[in-house]
Image 1: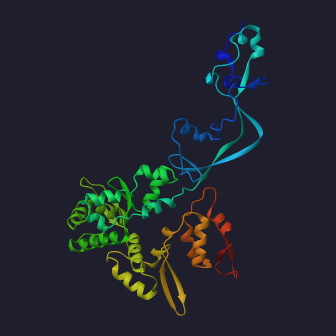
Image 2 (image 1 turned 135 degrees about the horizontal axis):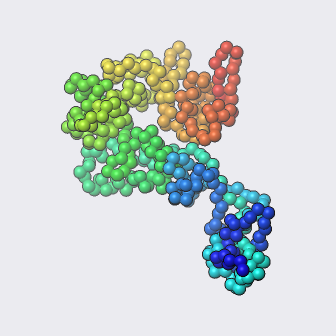
Length: 397
């Protein structure tokens, strides 16, 4: 007598153990139906460990299309229909089988073994890698900037409690922003965000300006080299000037980088480009300036140790000819949307025609999986070249 398989081999085990050139009978499961809660998901094999060990999450608000996030990447979830019949067969122990046990005994086994179909799937979900939808991060963090008034009111419990109602912790951000954890961290770093009392904040530019200028002032008073700032001394002096310790460290992080680790914290070097860009933004905050006037004030603000160059400001300012004069105005790439269609729309409202040397800094950071910079240009721009020896010009398609 043939050995009786568990649960009469009525489930998916029948198909898993099916030999080549063999066949099996199929039948309706007692619970056959639409089962809208069961959806097939097609996965590349590289995703299996993440899915099986529950290292993926679905993110999105009710009014958004859901995305699936691994630790480092974001994927759109698309339904793809199929013209073929795809049968879903549950495990044998999915439910109590409706056939009598005797049907599985003896010689009748070969005739009775079958697979029970619980659902016919009309299609499956597919994953397509997409850029993180990081613009929302800037939007929600910009609603409540951290300014000097809040720093001064740290001891005011009523003010602190009221302001925290509009703030966001890490768990809030991963629930609201459609990006993987790694992409979200990168986005926070790009925004120069800082975690204060458990909440992620963007510090107001004017307050950062005050802290930076105080740091530079102290460097002159104390004869500090901007290429070798002792962390402990800088933080201590800024605290004595009334700035929170967290903001003193944040200033070093935003405008510098640690070049040496020591027992008491480390040694920092201010980054010339970041400092120069900061002061250029400060000057142009009120509007455009004549080139000569801008350069005169900008060079006066830059510390003597640094060697500023107008090339440092690519992707931050634009120049334009008005008659015989050249004017400068601010246009920071960090202020532009991260989606290509919106980015190019704003750029061509700014200028109807762009030379490549001016356009490139404003599209360099665009990240669209599967599309190169050349492909983006083909999709969103029209290239023209008045003469063979002339620089190409890009206009809206």
